[in-house]
Image (cartoon, rainbow, N blue to C red):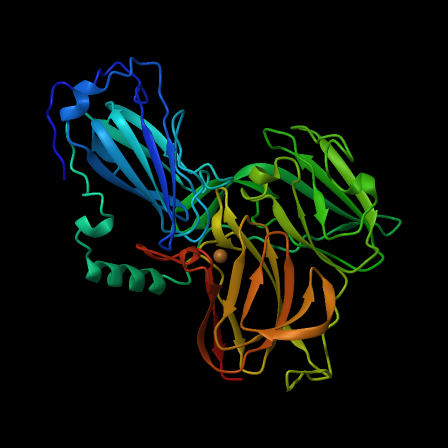
Length: 462
Ligand SMILES: [Cu+2]
């Protein structure tokens, strides 16, 4: 902890970035060190000699999915922020209107050094697309003189309450399954027109959505749901989808993984005009090929999709590998599927880390009996990869992006990258509660306990 009351420090009227010296060092996980020195000077005089007597203050920021934590109240004067990415994916730390660290991979750290940090408040955030919206923003308060901060050595200064960590995890897990308002993926029933066309109506709007108990966000929704309503049609069906845009901005709808005429591909302004706020647009095409598809906004997809504008679009049936023997396991010829579950992954926007629009403990629990065969279609509408791990029951991957595999394979962890779909088949073999979750551990657990991309199977004796 460093205290200073030196009257010679800052001119409070000056910008916090005046006479700013930034030293950025990237420290790799290994011993190899890449050091970058960046000197940034603002409009001040640059006369820093008077501060020479003020001891340097060390502070610490930690970047995770999706939060910025650490010393959010510091004193003014010469300050060195150590910024460490303890998360699983790339992050950075940006002072709004000021300096930034480079992009830091998991485990890397950087130092931002201010020659003279002036009192005030500073917005800090991660500028990787979607991360600020997902929660990676904070306000740094710089007080006159000294403030209690760490010793710069990382977490070492704080007393860790291990019992509290135990309690928080147990309590969070016992809260599952939790009731919340709203359910996504509800099957959308069509109106059948005279010529047999199946007509669907989608209304886009910003509507409240309870992601986890008590956490209600302004989601961007189709028909008020996250994911949007599930659309299932048969091969050869004529499809008509009327989109009524009640968002404050334009949108369009892309049919991801679905074969359509070019002018139905939903990429304004290339293939159609933007559907402006208050306007409607009609998509019409024939369901020519089987699909495990998705529909989602394409216009400002980086914002509209993570915030909730996504849904599943299934054409026909994807053939199962009935009667095949795969890695010594016989798949019955007469296999009957007891449940077919769309599992849409997201990790950003106002929805954040979620399964079918909900974060644990609000994620839907699944139940079945020993012997049941289950089909899951994973869809990744997020910005990151998610290795989906099923305890106890290996998953037979039989289709990728809706295309049946000539050689299906067993996998207990199925890696699903953004835009991908994997279809898996498995059998509930043993009774009990079996968790099913993304295996990027920071997508499922934090100091406050379990959250995000976790659910469970509750299997009873057959
Ligand atoms: Cu994940």
